[in-house]
Length: 204
Image 1 (cartoon, rainbow, N blue to C red):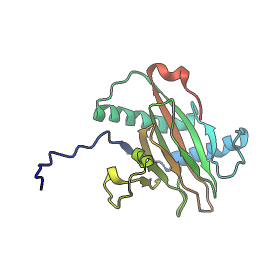
Image 2 (spheres, rainbow, N blue to C red):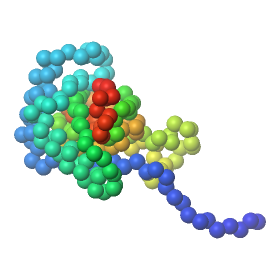
Image 3 (cartoon, one colour):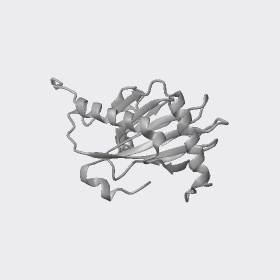
C-alpha cells in the first residue's frame, strides 16, 4: 500500500457574478417599461415575430435609462475596487429584452465585450423564465455530480428580481428559460467595453 500526503486543493479561475440592487425602483421601472413598449411599436427588428425569441431594442442614450447606467457605473467602480482591475475609459451598450409569454433566450455568450449584465424591469410572479449560467467545464463530459459546490455545478439558476442588477464576465455561456406566465417579462441587457475597443463593437 502506498502512503501519501495530500498537499492541497486549489480552485482555478473562478467565475464571479456581481449583484447590485436599485432601491426605490418602482417609478424608474414603470418609465422604462413604458419606453420599451413604445420602442416595440416604433422599430421593427429582423427577429420580430420569430417564435421563441425576445424582442430587442437598442436603449443607448435614452434618457429613461440614466438611473440604470448610473447604477452600472457604480457597479463597475465597485468591481474595480474589489478585483484590483485596471481599466481606462469604458462605454456601456444597452438593449431591452421583451420576453412575451412562451418566449425564451437560447444559450449564448457576449463576444467583443469584457463585462455583460442584466437589469430586471418587470418580473411576473410564477415561472416567467430564469437566467441560467453554464459551467465552462460542463462541455467536456465529466461525470455528473450531486454536489452543490460551485466547481461541481453544471448549471447555476438565478431567479430574477425587479430592481436587481447582475454583472458577469462576457464569455460565460447562459440562457433564459421559457416564460410560462401570461404576462411579459422585461429586462435590460448590457455590454461593457474598455478603452480602445469601442470602434470594433458589433451589435447582437
